[in-house]
Image (cartoon, rainbow, N blue to C red; front, side):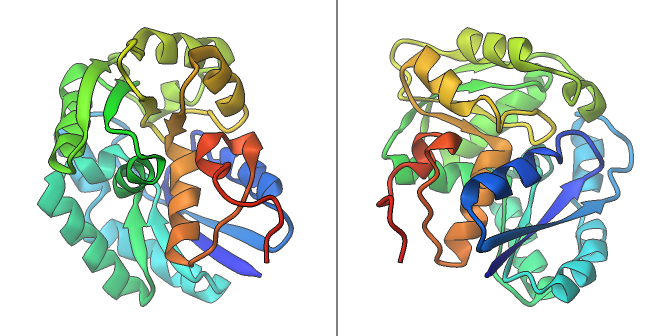
Length: 243
């Protein structure tokens, strides 16, 4: 049994995680601890407070007791808002506090982009434009080329959590460009786990979403590779038969 730990801010799209766990098979367990979201606002000041070391450390003990082997801070905006260097420091601090390998959703996107060998990216963000631009800057610092950024101007994660399939598809299609090799949907408050294969068929290219890449990153940290085509092209690169 491989136990994956996640720190998830508040309550929005956490039901993506049991869905993903089911699709991964019976020997992988997902343990999710909710952190204090503070003010629910996609604003830089609120996001910096949400991703602070003390708020993340508060959830670490519960994950240790669960037997988690790695931890991912499952919040994109609450990590890239610190910038490339600051996000590295955030993860290092989390790893020390947790006593286990650690990462964040922002780095999960960067590692997934490299895994998929795509560089030219389109971003479909629920965030206001200024916050979405910070995600583009983060990816650029990691060596990617961002061709388009589509912001949606939504302030709260609670509102994002109410979006359904129609809104998710509209966002992805509006963000996409002909030259983009992949489309990224960066908000962990957005329900996407049920839609990834259909999105990829619609757009004809890989779609990387926040909760999807967060779980993939936790598996990477524990040296697990799983074939789960229901979770999209990112999970379709391994042999069907796992050893």
